[in-house]
Image (cartoon, rainbow, N blue to C red):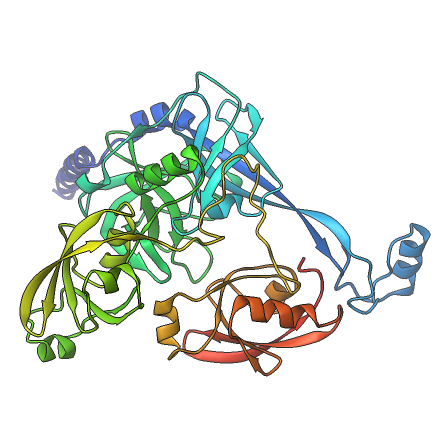
Length: 470
C-alpha cells in the first residue's frame, strides 16, 4: 500500500513539474541567435598617483633596501613626496551592435574618461573602438569599430512591454562574457534621483558589474532596453535593476551620430511633487500633475504665460501623472516647437500655448563627434563641477553651489562623489563656477583646502590636498 502511494505521489509530482515547465519560457533560441550581437568592452584609463604602487606597505629596512637598489621609492615616504607615477586603470562593460557596419551602443559611464576602448566580439575578434559621442544625462554612448557584415540586434518597442513580462539580459558580469540572465519586468517609467530624462524599465533580472551597457531582450529577441543601473547594498544584484528604454537610446544615438549635440526642450521652471495636503488646498481630486514652484524670468515658460502655483496636468498631449514625468516630456520636445499645456490655475482649467526653448548647453551633456574619447575637465583637486540649475538653487533657498558631476584623484580619495553639492571653499561661500575656480587657482600645490559639501540633508567639510586634479 505504501509503495503504491509513493509511486502515485511520484507520478503526480512528475506531472505537476511537467505542467509547470510548459509555462516557463525557453531562452535557448534567444541566446543562440542574439549572443553574437553582444560585445565585451574593455576600457583603459591612464591615471597618476603620488603614492606609488606599494602605498600602504609597512616600512621595513629590507624592503626599503630592495626598492632603493632598483631605483624605486621606498615604502614609508610621507604622502605627497613621492614623485607622481602613471598607472593604467582598467574596467569592463558590455554593449551591443546596432548596425552591421560597426556601430555599438553602451552606457556613457562605461567609457567615461577612456584613453582606449577595446571591443571584443563573441567570435573572439578584437577591435579598437572610436567614441562617436556620449550623453551623460541619459547615460548613452555610441561607439564605432572598423568592421562590416556584423550581426545586429532587432529593435523592439518598450511601450509594448507589460509588467510581469519575461525579459533577458546578455552581458559580461565580472568579465564573464556572453552571460545570460532572465527575469520579469517589475515596473515601467521609473524615475530615479538626479535622472530626470529617462523613464527607466525596472526588472528583477540579475545585473552585476560588467553588465552595464548590455541589452535587455523581450521574448521575441528584440532589444527593449540598455542595462544601466542597479540598486544594491552589497555591490551585487539584489533584484532591482534599471534599464534605459531603447527608443530613448536610439534617439540619443542618432543625434550623436549626426554631430554630437543633444537638443533638449526646456521651459525654465522649478517644479515639485503634489502631496495629498497640496491637492486638498488646490481643490484637486487626486495628486496628478506637476506643481510650478518658480519661473525663470524671460524663460519659455514665462513667455508662454505659466505662473507659480499652476499645476501642469498635460503637456504636448501627454498626461503628467507626477512631477518627475514633466522633465522628460519637455526634454523630448524639439526646441522651437509650440505645444499645448493643460493647467489647473486657482481651481479653473486652462490651456496655454508654449514655445519650448533649448536646454542651456552643458559641458557634460554631450561629447562632440570625432573627438576620439571623453576628456572631461577636472579641476586641481579632481572635481568635475557645473553650476546648479534654477530648480536646484531653489532647493538650497537661493544659495550658491556647484553640482559634482564626477570625482577623481584627491577628491575621490577624500570621499567626494557624484551628486554632492559643493557649498564653500575655505569658509567662502560658492557663488559660481568661475569664482570657485579663481579661488582654487590662487592656492599653492600641496596645500590642503576645506571643501564644504552637502549630501542629501547633511553638510560636512572635506579636507582635500591641492594638486593637478589627477
